[in-house]
Amino acid sequence: MIALRRPLVVLDLETTGTSVAEDRIVEIGLVRVDPTGTRTARAWRVNPGRPIPAAATAVHGIGDADVAGAPRFDELAEDLGAELAGVDLAGFNLRAFDLPLLRAEFARAGVAWPCDDAAVVDAFILFRERERHTLDRAVRLYCGREHRGAHRADADAAATLDVLLAQLAAYPDLPRDVDGLAAASGGRRPDWATECGRLRWNADGELVLGFSKHAGARLCDVDAGFRAWVLKGDFPDDVKALVRRVQRGERPRMDGVA
Image (cartoon, rainbow, N blue to C red; front, side, top):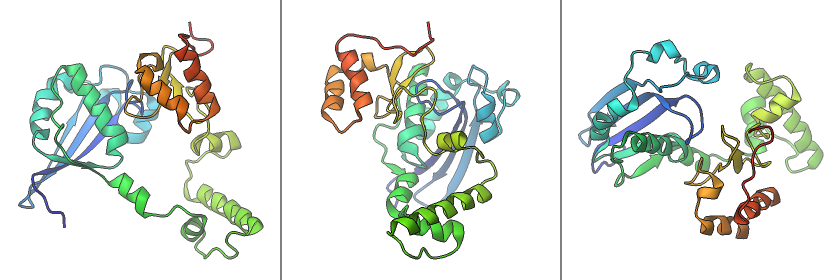
């Protein structure tokens, strides 16, 4: 169903967390589809060189003991680079997470990035663009009915409550308190320096970017032109206030971090 000009490699990573700058790979999975239609799969466990947080293990089931005897990424980088040379890539949320983290691992290993000429197909973006995330669809999905009175404020509010209660019934792992639900639904997290999370604090209490190709980089290290673009752009006031401080030569730090 896909016209392939060269092999397509579908890539997925399991990691120690969700920070492109700070976290490391613990498992790599590849499914290669050749233009002839032949499909092959490979997987590697990777020793990240640090403890795997319990929260990450709860997601992918990989603990410290599972990778104790596995090679480090720098020991795999040459072979993996050969697997990825001359192919196109596909994945789910590949552009925002897997590829930036994988590129960072190659850089740390001192091995050239093999995918500069790869076309990248991201199924997550296709899903996001093609499926309408409306209240009507949520009522149909979670409540099993059509939403009557759509776009009447009282009917929409009542339907939203029904959807929320149905989500709690459908997903037993969701928090049952308002603060927990707020965090699970995009609320502010402890490492966020701004309400939207565009700027964050790293482990050393330094201000870093939470978006763009510079995600994870210290704000003071990115090009001043990029910071000027943020100041001219459609960003919240709390983001711009911190950027202005950095532009003035200040180095904001997270409270309580030495």
